[in-house]
Structures are given as structure tokens and as C-alpha cells.
Length: 288
Length: 340
Image (cartoon, rainbow over all chains, first blue to last red):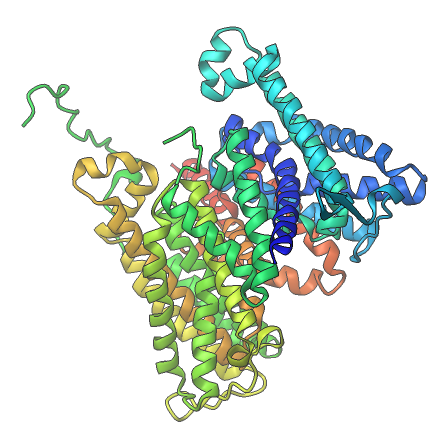
């Protein structure tokens, strides 16, 4: 029973880590540009499909396909930011919601057109399949890998935000766009780069998540709630908040589906409504 | 009176002409509106083969009007309005499957149930900012969807709720296969509710809602409680959505699970924005245009349809805020300027 519990807990952590990886970009976009981007999942889907195409058509190994997925999604994010998103930073939230729903629909239709409506398969490399014994516990090798990747990326992100010049610019822009612009920070450039970085991370998460989340054209809508949840619960623009929120959601979702399968999906939605009632600005919200 | 306050604001200096925005709302029916309502009546006689589609348009139109009440007037963004539509649909459907097939009382009950849940949900929704509201409305709709999905022994789950048998309307008019009664029944209900809602949004209460939309923070300063107004209009909106759902259940004699789905909420937003928000008629025009286009285009290829509707949404947001009705207003303003 205890081993079981630890196993579920670990799966939840791995799931949460993946959610965090995909959602962190959304959290930053919302914190930085105050933009409600429901199309964020589309970038994750793009990363997923890129991985699949690279592996099945071009024979690129899984580990090499992931960085390419990151780059492709980041480029797509940069282009879209430049052409479309930028025009709507000052628009109302309703406009942003509608715009990003429109983009999501287009992404879904395009993916269905190109790859068909089915689930995409992914063949993991041999060393990531099966179970690994850690401290007497049987843990899924792939989930262990996921957690390791996410830890590495989180550390890198924190270093980037806390220690570099660029990170300082991002933090300054989140706090006050006007003051930052007044100090000579090129806020537009900061926006573009963070948007691209966020989209890239979503793409990487999409590639990593094929095995866990599955990949089909409805991906952006199916998981939209989860991504939004991470941001809404964590508080926009906070890495720590997003991480905590993603882990809470991951653990509760997996545990809910494992222990009480009959009400599995409720757990997460009820949790979300309850959390939002008690923390309307998120757990670590910057805006009161 | 606080003597520190800034010099008294200039006494509403009403410009002699062209200040229609600042006038108190007046609700005389204009001739355009009367002509507008003659269109569905004319359609009944001229397109007898399309009455099923016609009543769907009327029902979705009513549903869009309900969203317009909170979105267009009070400025509350909802991503889960299908929750109340579905509640109404299931209430009416379940009543009829359990032996009470009287249509009008079914509508009233469905509206009451949806309104009650909407009232309760309203307390949660009005807390927080736009993002929180989006999430709470979405969350409530998802919980209801899951509930209906799991409670298959009551609702039929994914297979939908069949066997909805309706009695005759007023004991006289039987729902027929061509949809003649369904169409007229939907039209009368839509028009009746529309008259009431039109009066509502033109009342001082409706005006105060617009105040909430434009400047939430200033409304308390003039003695208007934002929270109470938002909860009130959310309740009304939910009840109207419930009636729309009930109409669908009664006229199609079936309730599908996707009455509660996210797709329906998103589609509704699209319809309303396509038509134009904040003017009640926008929802009706949007519903007609959207559903007729869907009927023609989706028949060709459903995937393309989704792509183009997405593209349309992007274009509307970027270039055509205000939708069809907004465009018409603009055209109208240009024409009248030329005349004078």
C-alpha cells in the first residue's frame, strides 16, 4: 500500500513536472504581457508533431528530436508574436480570448488536415522503457527521465531569470512596463524573446509529453484547462507559483484517477474552483 | 459634502446634437426593429423546407442573447455558458421522460433551475478578475459536463437522453415532423423573452450594467453595488440560457451530452462576437449568419469549416471589432452624415 502510494505520488510529480514545463511559457506571457493566450497548447502540439515527424519520417533519435521541437515551436512563437499577438497586447481580455480561440481552431483543423485525427505513436529509446529500481522502489524510467529534464530546465530558468541581464530585464518589465521602457529597456524585444522562449518550452513539453499525455489534433483544447489552471492557481508570472501549482494539480489528478476512478475528473475541477475561490489572484499572485 | 473635493465637475454640458450616447436610454420600438421581427415570420412562409434549421437558429439566437446580457452589457467574460443551456435542456428533457410533457411549464421550470444554479454560481463568478472568471465559469461547466457524463443512469451519458415525448402546446398544437409547430413555438418564446430583456437593458438597471462594464471602480462611488448587479444579471442570463436549452430539448425531443460541452460555449462566443456584442440583436444576427453558413459549408468539409471559423475569429478581432451589427452601425452613421 505504501509503495503503491509512493508510486502514485511519483507519477503525479512526473505529470506535474510536464504540466509545469508546458505552462511556464503561458504563465510568463500572462504575467509579462497580461495576455490571455488560450492557444498556448497549440505550440505544445506543434512540438509534439515535430518530434513525431522527425522520428518516423527522418529517423532522428528521440533525444535529438526534442531540441529541434523546442526550436521549431520557439520560431513559430516568435513569428506569430511579431505578426499577430503584438497587436493585441493592449486589447481587452475578451478580444485576446477570442483571438486565441480562433488560432486554436485553426491549429486543430490544420493538424487534422495534415496528420489525420488519430493518436500519434512514439517509440521511446530502449533505455527509457521499463522500470528502474531506486531505493527499493520500482519507478518508471521515462518518468524519472521527465523529472530530471524538468529539474534541469527549472534550474536553468531560475538562473536565467535571477542571474542574467536578460532576466533582470524580464523581471523589470513584469513589474512595470512603463518604468522599464523609461530606463531604456527594449520592452518589445523582451516580450518577443520571452514569448519565443515560452513557446519553445511548450514545444519541448509537447514532445516529451507524447507518451504521457497522448498526441492528437484536439490536444490544445483537451489540456487547455490544465495549462490555464497552472497559471490561474499559481499566479501569473511566478515561476515558483507555477511549479507548486503544477505539482499540486499533477498529484491530485493522478491520485484522483487512481484511487477514485469514478469521480476522477471531478477532483481536478473541484480543486480548481475551490483554490480560485480562496486565492482569486493565485497562490503566489503578484497582483492583489 | 467634502469640501476638499476637486471643483465640481462641469454640469453635464450636453452638446446640442449628436450626443445620443449620453441620453437616457429610450425604448421606443424603431421601425427597423419591427421589420427585423417580420423576417422570421416571412421565413416561415417562404422556406417551409428549412423550418428545423430555422428553429435551431431561433434557439441559438436566444442562447446568444443570454450571453450578450452578461458579456455585452455587464462585461463578464464567460467560457462556460453552456452549463446553463445544458441544465435547462436536461431539466426539460428529464421532466418529459418522466411523464410530464407539458411544454410551457417545462420551459419555466428549466429556466428556474438554470437560474437558481446561475445565481449560486454568480457568487463565485463575480469574485476576481477576468482570468479568474474565465476559469471559474469554465470550471463550473466542466464539473456539470462530467456529472452528466458519469450519471449515465439518469442522463443517458454519452448516448444522450432519448425518449423525450412532448405533449401538445396548449393541448392543441402537436409537434410535427417538419418542425412547423417547433418553429413557431420557438419564435414566440424568443420574441416574448426578447421583449422583456429589451425592456430590462433599457431600464436604469440596464444602464447601470453598462456603467459596470465601462468603469467598475467608479460605480460604487455613485452608490451602485457592482456585486449585486453582476449577480443579478448573471442569474437572469443563466435562466434565459436554461430556457434556450429547454427549447432545444423539447423541439428536438433529445438531449445530447454536448449541450454542456466546451465546444458549445466557445461556439456561442463566436456567434455573439460575429453578430456584435452589447445590442441584443447582435446575438440573433450572429446566430442566423453562423448557422446558415455552417449548414452550407460544414456539409462540404467539417475540418475546413473549423479552420475558416478560426480564421474568421482572428480577422474579426484584429480588424472588425463590433461584428456585423457594428459594421452596420458604422455604415448607418456614414450614410446619415452624408445626408445632413
